[in-house]
Image (cartoon, rainbow, N blue to C red; front, side, top):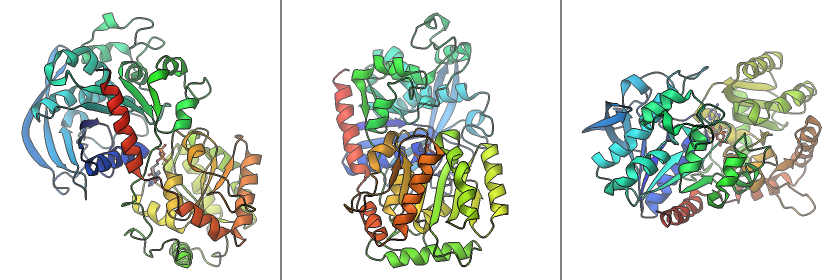
Length: 485
Ligand code: ADP
């Protein structure tokens, strides 16, 4: 099957979250399974294309935007250390600047940057003579590929047999912009924008809604999240839209790439280990603590957090209980994260107040994240909502027990460790309150000091969330989508 994957991120070239990992791991698996995926993302300024071996294709794309044309070039290369073709869409006006979306505030022309990629995707496929069976687009950034396919390109014999599948990685981000520019860049015109139309949402655009409505099939990243988002509580204002497409909405649990994430072979770990050599994991933890200036605390549990610092991730719950534990020397705490300024400030304060109990790295650091997955005993993920979550899966592979709130993909992957049964791979609480969270933390500490700890670690390490199963399910879904074309 020819799959054109259009996204704003792919790991390791451009990543701000789990979306990037999933786009990469799906394509890697599809390739192994004999399909032909290609990935199209923007050539962001920070991608060192030369160093990564990208070469100009010599193709110039003429991309219609509204009533005028714009131009872009295409670079071709491989996803590092794989055989997967990646094309970078080069347009310095849109993408030749720092960052992916713009931070701390988003770029003012993001609507235009998103539409440009969506429109260019069709021109790129034609220029490359790559006739896709499926256009697979990810999150609201590339959602407009769906109406473009259905309204314009369905008349083009090149795309006549192409299905459109749209994947929701996080419903909380929807792409709400002023309508005029979007309707102009897409060429659909304001006459298509009226109350209740598939482009309209409370007087503005909502790219997510538009993608959901026009796609042949809509997927999201875990079975539980696919059910949750059909209710007002989790639906982020789009539950009615999702219910309207309920028959075409599928939850497919994300997978992870064990070639990249394996403590036995991970080159980012100074000491490698597996389920039979857990003593080495303990050495890794000691080394990690020593390297970060923490002494005499190796016997305490090391609690890790690797996360965007946003409300979604349940950071408030952590703040509620953290000092209590640090003050009483109940655990050592290490965080790698970045996000909202008030959270960053709080964790910097913790670092200064408890220098011999806390390690705080504000920023994005892939290598350090691997080290912390390996070194930690527990990883905290008390999310308010979590479409799938990858960090709990990585943690488990590294013998680090996740402590999660039962929501979305966390519900689908983590089971409470029950000492009497020796079953379970982590710790789970249900209600979003600090009391229940704290109770789960206390349970994890009890297991840590018991002989069950290694059993629980072994249970976690034996889990298989490999992306090949996930990739197969997407292919099933693509075939199902093609039945509609
Ligand atoms: P989300 O996509 O909502 O951020 P996921 O759990 O699906 O959450 O994916 C998060 C991904 O980003 C994981 O691969 C995690 O290791 C990584 N990550 C998050 N924050 C950081 C950070 N500060 N440094 C390195 N990696 C990070």
